[in-house]
Image (cartoon, rainbow, N blue to C red; front, side, top):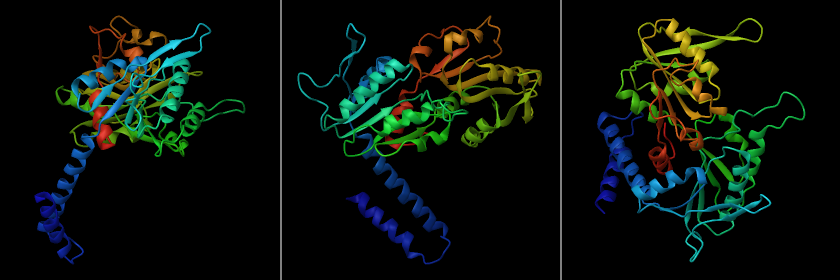
Length: 364
């Protein structure tokens, strides 16, 4: 066709040059070629259709994906029941009255917010992979065992490794299971997977950047050097001040957060990290920035873990109410569904970025 002919012409322009350094015209032709090829690949990927199976906590996203993209996604509700003795009584959607899953690409929206639901979802994955599906993509935005990747004494269980073993031991449907995870806490966890599962690491930072472009934020802060090394490069396309904080040892076991690099004076700052538990470090960081003269302090984390509703301490009237805005994603729906709408919290929806990453394999 015309596109193929044009690509051939462009290829000849690129390859005609025997010089080591391309001329401007050849470089332009090479860029045009790359753009055409990328558009063709993108159109092919965007035509891929998925059958969706979802954990109960993710059904809202599954329904919205089907509603907004009915030509690409078909959601099959699953019954996550229990027998009287507490064992699983699960009926996966899409099998009756006709089998609509075998031979198809299956997208499984997972949420491992506690051990019980995690085991149930592993059982569904195994069943799907034994049902002659074409491929399985698991979207698990929050990988809950990412912080438990090492042990300090014999007998402790490194659950990051054991979960990786379970994923790697899933049945093979002819290709490995793609495990999509967002802002994994310890990046080396991806290499714990082997054989039948491959990690696909994504980031939710583009969601924050969209909000920042319509705000007055002019500075990004990181609570420690590790967060800075991980995320700072994702903000290089924005004209922002960068601040790095660090913990110092106080009296006893206490830790104090101080600014180690950058100037907070008069800045409108957002603190960026991958997750929040009780939020002690985020709070100390926000307090240090305000004491250093920041005009305002805000926070963003991809994963709002907030055990025992610890988010209440950051809400208006709480003892850690130091932030103007607190952005999180809906990576842990059973937590973010309970955050108040009329307070500092704003939940950023992962749905569109998940769809984009399905097609392009990277959200950086």
